[in-house]
Each structure stands twice: as structure tokens, then as C-alpha cells.
Length: 242
Ligand code: F6R
Image (cartoon, rainbow, N blue to C red; front, side, top):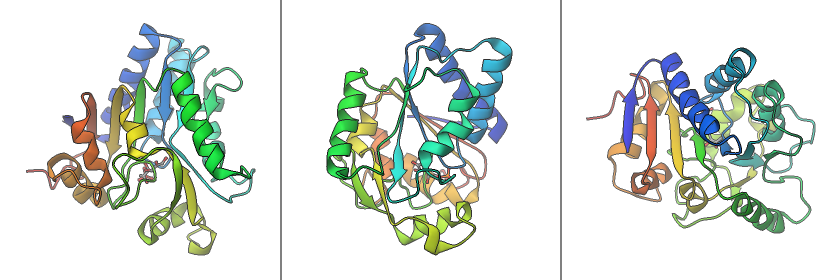
């Protein structure tokens, strides 16, 4: 596991460099996209490189990590819509190239299996962007998630719902209770994991991620087993590292 400590703007550029290098090497690369605040500067940087440097996503595919269940199709916080706003609409992905778990499906179990198949038939994810929750979750694999898990329905913890209330007018009642999320084994199948974390609130999760024992109680620790994992953190998020 490679750990880089740098200011947030620098981290976003490093993550964008990794994605750009992959796309220049293989324009049909498969990207793994995260939502939340951590990757936003990366998306700004990729949009800028698309506009100014001709970085193209036209042949690429993308897979989102997770999606809320039971949120209106046009809700701005539906992850599919967030990804559309933050990155997909700002670059040149082909129609249908960006995929997400279908949180509006009638049969959610079948939707999860379909999603796993779609990732596999695309050849797997080449570069997976990740954030980490204050409780150590990656995607929505909350503490206690099976390290062997695949895409499935999960219940969000009270901590995560509180953390995410800021996206829902600070009204906890509006935050969905359930989600569909790639499992930890799904994420581990990606060829390169790039996790971003900034701010003091992430310090304990980053400490566990990098230095803690591998445990389902800190789901991000599974990344210690990955052959190519990069952890990009600012000074505050790194403040509990030994
Ligand atoms: C989002 C996701 C989550 C977030 C995590 C951190 O797709 O999978 O694991 O990465 O909750 O969120 P932020 O970046 O908002 O601190």
C-alpha cells in the first residue's frame, strides 16, 4: 500500500494523473467512480483536462460504487444524478457508458447480480476511486461487512446517515435507510485502488486503514491485501499515522 501525504489540490491532481495515464494507455479503460465530497476536486481536474488538454472518455466505461435505495429518480442526491452532474456531463462518455447499481429496481437482489455481471463482462475495473467514511466504510460496506462480499443491499448506519445529512438539508429523515453497494470483494477485484481522504474527521479511519489489523469492523483495512492500492491523504487525515 502506497501512502502519499500532500495538500488536497495536489492529491486531486495525483488521482487525475492516474486516471489520465490509464486512459492514454487504454482509451477503452474501465473506471470506478465514487460519490461523496472526496473525489469532487478530481472530477473538476478531469473535466478541466477534458476541456483544455483533449483528455477523452469517449471509449471508456465507468461503474459507480453504490446507490441509495428508494430515492426519487430525479432527486439531485441520487448517486446516478450526482455522477452525471459532477463528471459524466462534463466529459465525453458515450451514452450508456456510465453504469450504477439500480436502486429503483423492483427486484433489488437481481439488480445486484446484474451489476456484478456487467462489471465482469466489461473486463473489470482498471482504476477505482474511493473515499472512506469516518467509521471506516468504503463504498457502503459498513463495519461488520463481509470481507468476501459482492454487490448487495445494505442498511446504512446511523453514523453514515448523520454524516450524509449535510447533502439532505441537514434533515436526517430525508436520508435513505438502504443502499445497493459493491461488496468488498467486488472492490478488491479492481486492478488499482485509489483512495482519497482529507480532514481531521478521517484521521482515525485512515489510521485503521493503513496501520490497523485487517478487520471487518474497519472495512477499508481489506485494502492492505490489495497488490496495487494508493492512499492519498492530506496532513489532517494523516495526523494519526505513526
Ligand atoms: C460514495 C461512497 C462512500 C464515500 C464515503 C466518504 O460513493 O462510496 O464510501 O466515499 O462515505 O464520503 P465523503 O467523501 O463525502 O467524505
